[in-house]
Image (cartoon, rainbow, N blue to C red):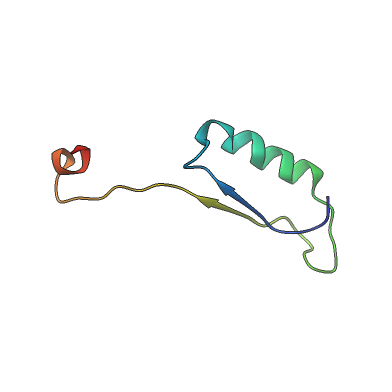
Length: 56
């Protein structure tokens, strides 16, 4: 509602990501700082040489 960007830590609460994004877009109001909504999402990524190594 303040016309600011929004960052969401999806790795802490992934089940709320889509709800948070929807609410942010619905309630966003343009401001001198930002004319359109801008959302950043933090997610956890695990990478390894093989699937088994990644699971370990």
